[in-house]
Image (cartoon, rainbow, N blue to C red; front, side, top):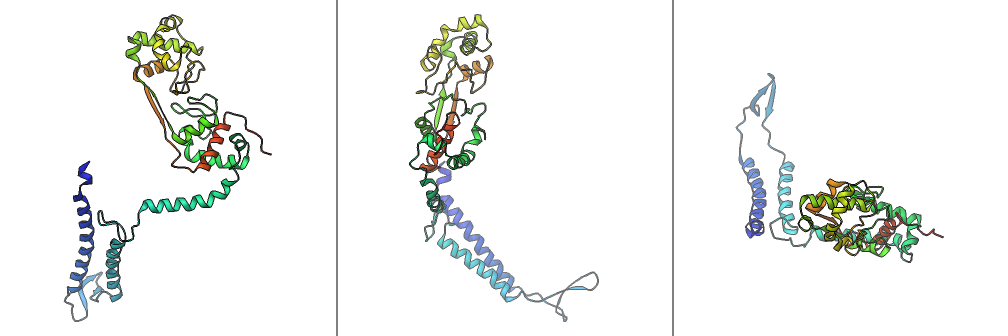
Length: 304
């Protein structure tokens, strides 16, 4: 990494920038000094199509000055703005500051829209049509890429409409998830369970918890080995929202259903991450988005 942060690269970039500008200036000067010997009729002697000749007229002065002004502008730009390696420019302009200023202006413009929602609860927001229209747009721009435009999710991405919540479905827990994100991790458990055949037995026991098709003999053999899983999922397999451990009894399968999928999960484990939205959206936007997600699996209060 030091190869990319070493001061050499700053000097290199600055040198290349200046060399390019000075090279253009040198080329312009040499071109202006070069004199082409013309014939008596003021042509270069080049003839095309028998009678099409090239005149030996000098480049217009205004054209030459345009090149000079371009070079002067380039040098001036590098004095005021970043462009010479680590030199930040005398104006102190940065893309980050520009972005932050634009975001502040945007937040100020939309503040009156969200002011109406400030005193409303999550349930009230979920029943307010204007708020949910905004919530839908926020969801489409920030959440639909993973959870789908209908919020039904897909393999590896939770369905937000079925009431099955890994970390809790209360407004407070949904807000916490949206604000801070989540990192769900199940470690590989094959070593704790036993042999590959015993892992298959546990898989069938897990299938039996939700009434899914399974081998009853393998399920009965796998039940004692499920003790290794009970620390997170509980002895009854109903999960633990404090840990984000899913309920194994409700026939909802986030990462795939069946013996092969469960065996792979036990053998390899799984890490899933939802990114935090707190630094991306404002607090009023997060409140509306929370209400929109909550309303997907709950009955909102009708706005009066």
